[in-house]
Length: 102
Image (cartoon, rainbow, N blue to C red):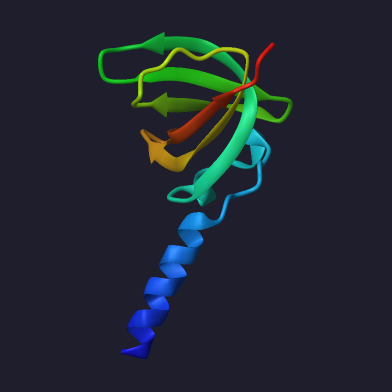
């Protein structure tokens, strides 16, 4: 019983922790399944009826981002999401996106 309570407390507390922003170049297949926070410039934006897709680039690399909220993105952007391995490439499925005003 105590171990079950401990697991619930651990799971609840980790959902409130905010990850630190990391370099895009550090997001590789070893991060698959983890929540990551990255920041960079939006490039190659395109949208479908289901989702928006764009490349986020910083000085260390670039990565594909998928946003199922299908918003318009551009400029300097911070993305919080889950790293996923798709067709041999790492990508981020966003849960939160913030854009800096230019």
